[in-house]
Structures are given as structure tokens and as C-alpha cells.
Length: 110
Length: 115
Image (cartoon, rainbow over all chains, first blue to last red; front, side, top):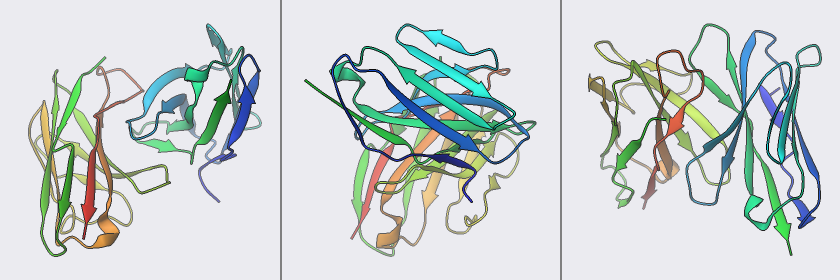
């Protein structure tokens, strides 16, 4: 079983739609959680950290459920520029290593 | 945030040769990381590069194939040795933006094609 699992997609949604991505992780010692965005032929860029209380940044909302070892990302009012691959990333307690999910590809169409 | 640069941005190499990739961070960082992203795949950690000590390699990666240098707190190199077409990949370095940071920022990557 992979340490971090995501639905690879692709998710094809119209502009203005709301889309949700899910991610599960297997190591209960995981401590820090992130969503990264990767555009085609570019490096991953941090989108947001994910906190137990949930956090929101504009149109983006991230949730963490430690009991279920589940992380989500909600994108509201999708824009064409949101088209990218979204990577779920986990860091285990007391290490500096980031473990990446396989990524979920989002394509927003006009 | 840390600004990270890599050289070269891309290269095409013949099998059996070696390529050294450079990574420069605009601030001093304790740890730097090297990842590989194979076509259509996610990122896999190759090794953690600590200044003043040998790099720590992940399962499946060995020093003879991927020697790493870390001469100071802002710079690291990764060498891909005795290359084969299976080494064709994007190689990325990363570093945390600060000593207490959990997240990492990435360089732009080096796109390697081995013929």
C-alpha cells in the first residue's frame, strides 16, 4: 500500500464549479500535511498547509481528519488557471522527509 | 520563502556518462533534499544532503550511483553516474524556507534525457 494515496483523476470541470480532492495516508505518525500544486513541466509549489482545525485561503479550503487519516482540498468557483496537478504531501513526525502522493490532475474548461 | 536555482535546466546525455546537477539556495539551510520525478509520476526522495556529513539515501538509491556533495549551507550537487535511459527523469532539489519550517520549496528542476 502506498504511504499517500490520491485519486489520479483527471477531474474535468467547467469554470465556476466546485471540486474536491481526497487523500489518505497510511502512517499514523504523520505530523504535517500539505497541498502542493504542480503545473505542467514546472516544479511543485506549496498551495497550503493543512491544519487539524481546517483552513481556508480564498477559494481553497483544506481539511484534515486524523482519526480517518484523510485530507481533503476543496476548490470553489474554479478558474481556468486552476488547471494543474494537485499533490497531497505528508511529513512524518521527527523526520524532515516529505512523502508525495501521485497527484490528482484537474482540468478546468470554459 | 527560499529561492532555489538549479543548473543545468535540461540536458541530453549519452548512456555511460555522468552528469552533475547543481543546486543553489539564496539563504543558509541545514538540510537540502534531492528528488526524482519520472515521466508521469510523482516525486520520489533520493537523498537528504546535510552539510558536513554524508548524505542519507532512501531505499533503492545508492551513493555510487547518485553521489552528493554539500560543501556549504547554500549549495549542493547531485551526480547521476553511469547513466542509462532509465535515468531519464526530472531531478529536483528542495530546502525548507527556515529552520523551523515543515514545508519545502523546490528548485525549477533539471530535465535529463539519456539516449
